[in-house]
Image 1 (cartoon, helix red, strand yellow):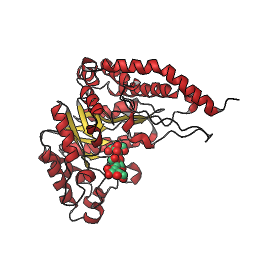
Image 2 (cartoon, rainbow, N blue to C red):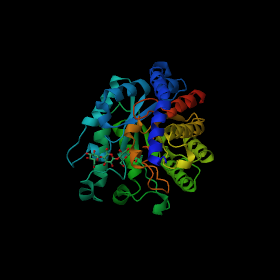
Image 3 (cartoon, rainbow, N blue to C red):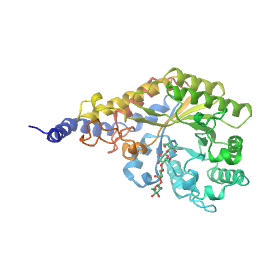
Image 4 (tube, rainbow, N blue to C red):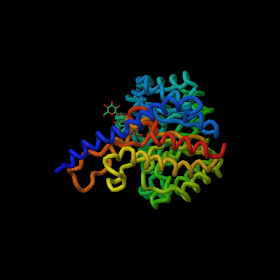
Length: 382
Ligand code: G3I
């Protein structure tokens, strides 16, 4: 009797043999994807910027930086510019990683977006012991003036405030009960944007949010609260220039009316729209959806289909100016911790890691790469 494991081993070998032409094709296609065939070249032809998030360690990997420089026209630090990593002590900044990305981008004529000045996560460990209602405003403005001022004139945009909406917190204005709200009050948003504009008048100042993309009920309520926030900020003459739609999306979701109304609502306020953190979580892909064990190719196909579906809706609007993926290669995705659930039979072999990004763990272009390029080509010029 062939045990499941033997079957899997034999099948894996068979899959590798079957996959070999695909890998070789990918390798060959890898040489055909640079220059005029790159993501950024295709994006540029439609007036778009193609970008990705970069981890500090990634810049030390020549293979990684070679693909990064060849494929993208915009980068964002995955963590290096956040409050905690960049200000580890009350009187100490750590700029090395942020400087390295800004310098790399400058050397390769790549634009940079900053992420982020104000967030309820990744605050430095000292914050909870030091920040009070009396000093929080000064902590906030000093931080933005210092970091924004350091990169003044070098930033395409900044995520000034990240993820300030949490409808389930029960406030009429939908604001998240974040440490900044508790310490300063709802004015912290206006203070942050005005300070950011003072620090760097050239940067496009962005409000960045997640969970507002699809037509599911939770997203609809959060989407409405987000648009209401943008309207309040614009009515108060806050220097707000763009909405960042993070775009952490999932296999099985649907996009249409809600996403179009969100983008159109932002455009009606005179805002640009950036898709700031695109990746596709395939945790919902079940064994029954794919022909195991060749499920890597099937999962890649399903993920590429989601890229096509989502970007086809989003890029209908000329207000959308940039598409950034939250990482370049599956090897570094933050989603690694969000593994697909096993099927009911827990003796199942471990499922392959998530494959949410345009390049696979070997830095070869995934089907999602070609899906992005194809949607760029079909998008209206902006
Ligand atoms: O750098 C430290 C390291 O010194 C330490 O040894 C290690 C173990 O504790 O932690 C390292 O810091 C980690 C950091 O990533 C850098 O790798 C933090 O623990 C970890 O929490 C942090 O996760 C980041 C997460 O934001 C934090 O919430 C992810 O990399 C990053 O991809 C993710 O990005 C967010 C966006 O900023 C906002 N939108 C959602 C998105 C996904 O959560």
